[in-house]
Length: 170
Image (tube, rainbow, N blue to C red; front, top):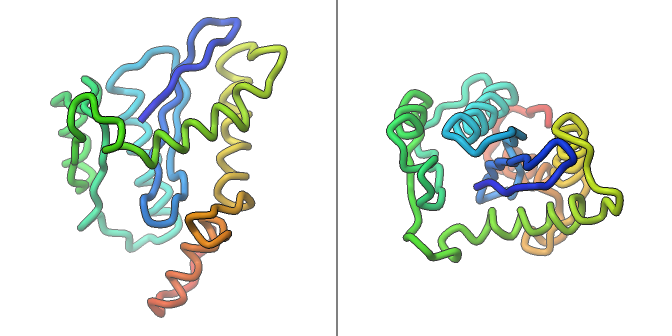
């Protein structure tokens, strides 16, 4: 999903893709418009993260869930998912609960980063850098109650160890 942030340069749109198991944010993109390219680049980034961590990553069984916004229901986005080997899943129109995980994460993003900036945001570059830092902190350091007070990176490392898979860098 994505959200909007007011800056002195105008509205910026921040798209996120999050792993439903580990809660790890795998991709984010900051852009000046809320187009199909915004969400497509986020999915590409997430696939790239998985391939960088695990060169044998196969998209088989990966489901990308989204709301029913026009960006996610477009032919171009559907083709992007197919190109990457992902299956798409779209929530019901007007039902925020179908997308509750990412909606909750966006709420945390706004509370923990965006709204804490009393002076506001200058523009895209500043917001993008701050978002990158927040995502790194969220994945590596932020303890999550739903994960038993572990971080997303710790959950993924434990899963790899449990499965007897080769160790991977975070």
